[in-house]
Length: 165
Picture 1: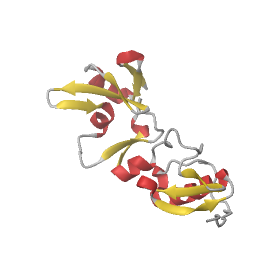
Picture 2: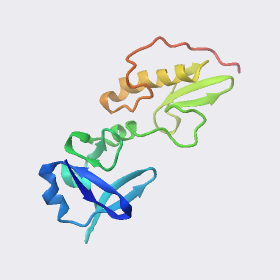
Picture 3: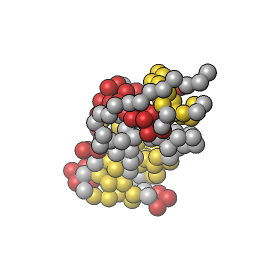
Picture 4: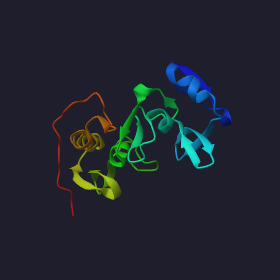
């Protein structure tokens, strides 16, 4: 594993076999929302380091397994669809819940999965139960790409409740 310096005080890690090829270019820190990536500029436009490592197939995205855009070791990179890449994203900032896929609902918590509110999974008395429901649905829908609230919990009984209308 080797380190390549970027702009703005950032650095990225790459595998030894990629270092010489990548280090011949000037790489910048590209900040996108809450993730930082390594990028360089060509006459054709910007190139992200993780795409340079895995290849130019534009039909696929590149997912960082650990969510760290500066960890560009091959073991951390995998080709993905847009949906799979989004499944591995962090929870949205500013939500009432500390868990991904969970929101406040009347006197309890609601679990949903998917884009723009997605599929309704149920209402729960506890925030933790709603997060566990999200995890089960995410694991079933996205498998290894699912970013879970409780990665070490495999399965747990869920306690649903009917909310007051």
